[in-house]
Length: 127
Image 1 (cartoon, helix red, strand yellow):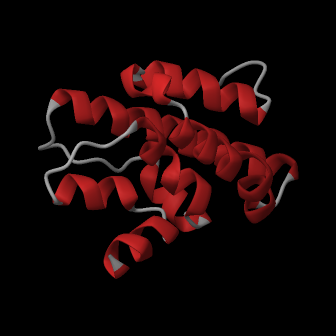
Image 2 (tube, rainbow, N blue to C red):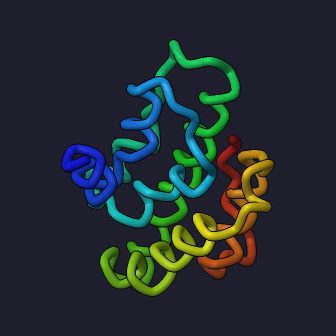
């Protein structure tokens, strides 16, 4: 239980679940965005497990895309911890409490997060 809490607070809950053979709920893919450091988000822009099944790789791609968008917002006008507290942690909590997200595709998470981030025009990065 302590390890699960540590991984949650460090933004690595999705990886923790995968390592234990468990499914990863949609909200857990926002965990790194909500709790990770700028270095963690930078690493996530290219990270992912190439050995993961296609469905999991799509979630890594979505999180990678969103990591880049978050870092873009931070470099423009915000402090990461402020953006996390104001936008990303509330998004994570909302997704965790909404059963309807259980059937979301990665693109739906991206769309919801971009809306919350106030991105009017997504960058040209592809998922």
